Amino acid sequence: MATFKKTAKKATKKSAPRSRPATGDAASGEALSKSISESAQQIWLAGVGAFGRAQAEGTRLFDGLMKEGAGLEKTARAYANTRAGTVRNAVETGVGQTRDRAADTWDRLEKVFEDRVQRALVKLGVPGRDDVQSLSRRVDALTAALQARKSAPARKATQAAAKTATAKKAPAKKAAPRKAATKTAKTPAKRATKKAANAG
Image 1 (cartoon, rainbow, N blue to C red):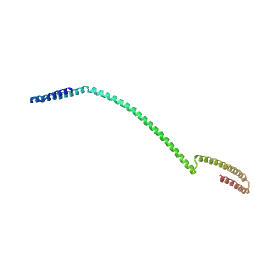
Image 2 (image 1 turned 90 degrees about the vertical axis):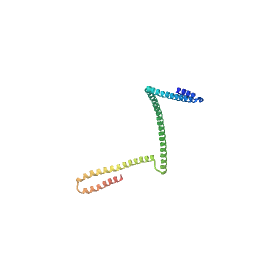
Image 3 (image 1 turned 45 degrees about the horizontal axis):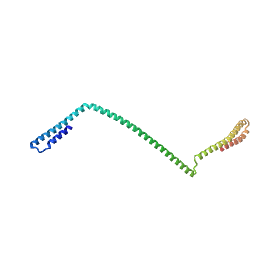
Image 4 (image 1 turned 90 degrees about the horizontal axis):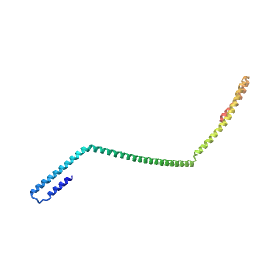
């Protein structure tokens, strides 16, 4: 390229003085034409030389560029992985904090709701959990007491019925007038059993 500039300067210096006769103009035109063709020839030769060098060194250059690209890719992936890990950790931390805040908020909201509902129930006179449990224990105690009372007369009635049953069997061997007496003895036993059953 430096050669082109020199020849271009020479060509312009030769064509600069226009005071020469007409034959000089033809000569200067020829010189200019010659310098332009020389420059084109030099450019062409430089291109052919570059092409030859590219062919000769092309494989080595290509392999070198591949190695350099592989190294850059490895570096970029390592950087991306570290950044991705950092971003992942930041996101997980943020999600964890948000989850904790949401749980705390939800717990507070639930507590406020429960308190308000409890106050409304108390104002309406609806018994609370403790009141219901206390009443349940009292009902269980009263039921047990009633069962104890029912079982005591029922035992007495069954004992009385057992005595009458044994009494019935023994007089059956005697005469017929006794049967009428047995019927009267049966009636009070039945009445006692009915009373015990009605009391329960």
